[in-house]
Image: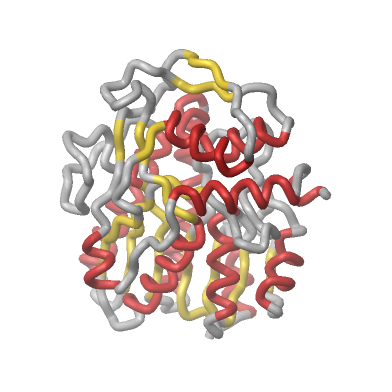
Length: 337
């Protein structure tokens, strides 16, 4: 019986697939490669010494997607696939609602048809909107400040309703904070298409000389240095959280919800300083106006995951920056080297 991983060639998905393979799981990757590279599959095989089955399929193509279920015995699904940039979602809300919501509905309908009951959903801290205080607990009020976050919250609500109606379903909603870092080998890491939307890949592109200067969106937030504060978590810690969540739902857990973060908040300027230390060079930056949909501060209380999953983030900020730099330095052109 296999674990199907949608978006498994992507940044978080690829790191999770390696850990799944190393733990003895049979893995099937579904990815349309719209924001990832086919070469990731070779790196996954190189690092795990195992070759997962791969389908290049867009989930919105329901007929082709369902063929995967006809051809394989699937026991669980980890759902990463989806559009994920906050700023882009403000500019292209219809694309985000269409892609993220419909693809998830297609998966859930096929799960019902093929009697698959285990589902891990990649949610986000954006469902907490602009929190009144930090650290953030899972029972905090939910709201959103951008269409990307709204799609995540809408899917969470769908999952809650579906689980209420079908007690056989076991669903883990993982609200994670800001993934950074890369595999310690330097062989896989974050390589978004075009101009990066997230801070760390933007910093690494400036450090390697692919981009001239880092734009920092606002320095007038109510934080210790005026720039936005976030909870940055190493992608390997995040991947491990998915394995722990999979173990949990296999015990017939019903619906469970967990924050995955370090519990520490770092500002944009803190990140620039830490990365400068890791790469041994200054990162030039400029302050520009705030970005639509951004908030001042967001960091997690992950004590529930520690108590119920036995999960805890291991890697600190220095390690996150060192691994990110190793990946970028060894792969200046990403997977096209």
